[in-house]
Amino acid sequence: MTLDAKGRIERAQNAARIAAKNRRAKTEQRDKEICRAYLYLSSGSMEKAEILKSIAFLIDQCGGPNLKKQETAFRKLEDGTKLTRQRIHQIVKKGQKPS
Image 1: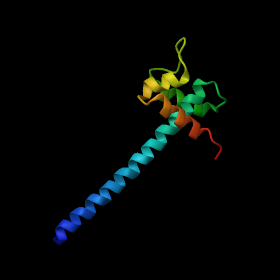
Image 2: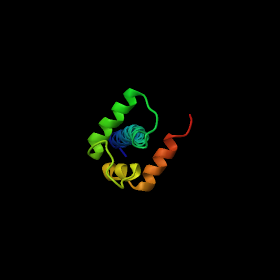
Image 3: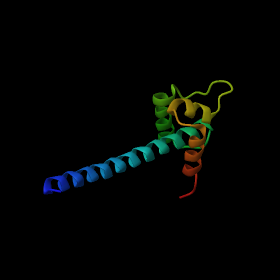
């Protein structure tokens, strides 16, 4: 291999590491938003700023902050975020653990 080929390989590996780091950060942010929205939908106690952030997320992702008749918080988040109900359960369970 020439020096240029090694440089290209190293550059590609570095780009892959950066892309993975960005994906993890974006996923963490999404998970925080989902936990906050679930807490709002399940009528948990929240601060006013948190309520506004969760309403903004629900309007953006799920079409509004109100539940329809016979609709659960998990169902609304599942439909809005296009994640499975099992994955939403995992995110909420992980997010509600005391740190």
